[in-house]
Image (cartoon, rainbow, N blue to C red):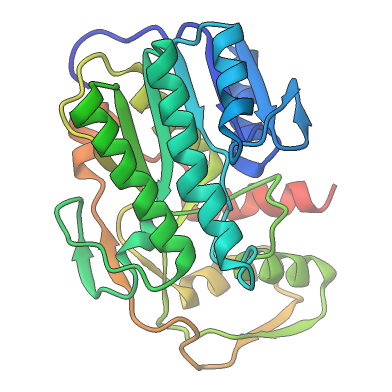
Length: 298
């Protein structure tokens, strides 16, 4: 990390009732940070990011030093049959947050993007790799990145976009393949899942995702504007199944042997985030899976 730590000051979190947003708010409040948590349906205050007047009202009533913009569709599996809604929330919603931040002098905005912008590119990728989104979800996140960079370059807004990989951990409510595997293992029965053993996964524990957000918020001088926040090298699905089997050997789980999602990156390089932000993931996959299963069993 370069320079001394930046004070987050008063913090606004959008999407504060979602998986990542709620975990971030809980962490910040436990640390004594002054936080306003907003979401479309509640939190400290209801705020629909697709409505500029709502976002503008929140930012004008209180000065914020840091905004963590987590308010978005949380994955390509969500609202998949409503692509225009995905675009409104992820792309237009981000533009609304950025404009409100510009107009009210917010100190820094952290925008949550996704590693899905790389699409089915093979081999290792980093921030210099040309994204090739293959879903409206990924395209909307890339658009959110581009408008963030435009606000940074044209208007001088201090904004950083983070390409977060597949966030998992206690509290995840949206359906995922990993979640289904863990629930089946806990049930102790059988299950067959649509994946090939060699399919590469890019899971990032929620604690490491929070660490990435905080690193971006606290680094004083940041010349770069996009960072991969990932666990690095891809992990084969067979390794996931082996880790689960070690924890629940009675479960009879298997993969159907068909590649579900096509090719993808072998590794999503996070060395830029390590060098500039001081971010390094610390939650091992086996440790994270065990913690998640423990939380699911409560």
